[in-house]
Length: 281
View 1: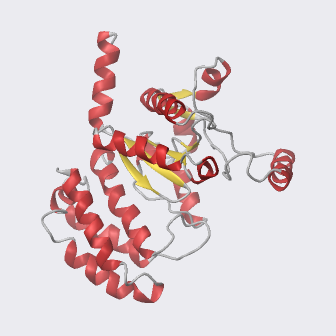
View 2 (view 1 turned 180 degrees about the vertical axis):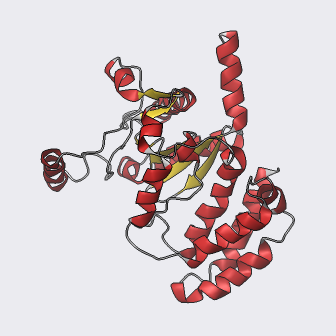
């Protein structure tokens, strides 16, 4: 599918929906969306969905009907909610048939994922992340630190599972190196989310987060990168440019989710990495 054409069609659709952004505008927005999804520009991505075009459209319309503006929803308004779900269809097209990690133990024992902690201790990671605070004392310490130094680190819960595909680690290290070179003196790239189980994704949805299902996170092909925090360093434009450059090269699908940007590795990037590993390049 011509993804540039698809993304342009999404942008045009959002302009049409922009005047119907409130919860009371849902019927009008749904009507516009239903009509526009019949356009030829949307057909290849919808048809390539493993569930089939009708089911993909039905799922998208359900997500629109259930939209609720709230603090945990990364979509600032209805148009942003629709944009995120339309671009997430690219992830589904690529990885909707891939084996997902259904439960947390499935993810923890997945041989295709690597544990980031040993890599971090050996200095092999050029990006930053932090683990989710599960124990009450650590949560209290972090809360106190946020009050005293609110801008020291991004406002993120941290990784529940510090596990990722090797290809994701490679991409993040490359992005971190590019970011360091393009924005000297800025803190390193910060990763807020990597592989998730379907179990975790459902927990996030229940809490009101924009956690799509199916999700490339649940197959280990997606990651989220902090964006808003870098505004205080004047580096968001640089980082956005690097991510969009990777998208234009066909390496990733990039989705602006407000505080963070979502990245999904493309099958072409995965194949290229596998070829490089085979040849030693």
